[in-house]
Image (tube, rainbow, N blue to C red; front, side):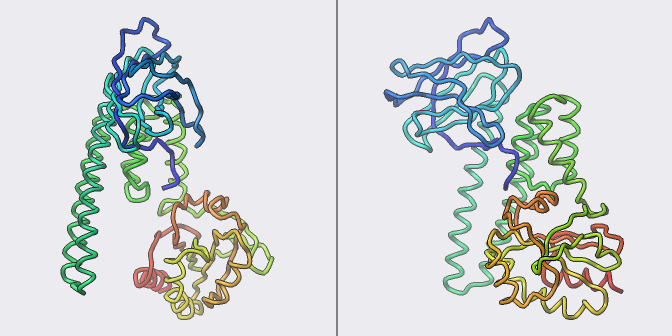
Length: 369
């Protein structure tokens, strides 16, 4: 997911024991690294998707200490010699203890000293358990597939869905337990799909805006949610204008009066290309009745884009700014994966999203009755 970004790392272990801080404008870290090196340990912060170094020290034996100025609770990353990384939250007056191996990416890692980091550690353990269970089911699924056991595959897929639903349920409980901590934003961003859990995320954004209106994490999260609101079902589709494949400019609003399928795709997208034959058949059947499709390509190369249109026989309207994932329209519509579709009624309102195959055709047919 392209998203706000406070990743939960499954990391190594360092032992930090903190002394009582007398300065409320700083936080203190005192720790031990089990495998020290003659190299630096860094404290870093992720800002605008860039890693910014805040401070660095060399361990004294196995011990090290940081004392860092802080105005608000913030997510930091600790970097052990470029080999092991760990996430933690700290703010003014905090005293943290961290334990780490320090010499391997998946080594033991533990942070204590405040409730935020306790929750992060629980979340990390839950993610590991879930990933292990998914890996086991995937292995079983592939085994069933190798012998053509479709019934067995169906059973395993059902088990996967149940496992995922339970994981999501447990994640929401953990997010709720974080209250109005910035950790709740991190967990929600990393665990939940905004489109699938929009109401929950919207409620969280409102709660955080009330509790921490000036936090950079709250501001960014609320901005994402508010943009999502603009493309929710029932909203008028945001207008835009892009160059078409033949050099003309097409405005989305010029298609009002028709049922429009706004289709985000790319020549390099396998699932998009696999779906194209179904869309071609649907377009041929319903274009005379008032259907229009506007394909928005996330290609960078115009030749690739043109060749895909020709090869797949895509006779509808096509536009692109040829910026790939940096497409302004993709950002406007918060597209995080393709294919992505928005179905618009004759007034230009969004009535459905991300339908494919028979479901997409059934929705178009119902709108054209």
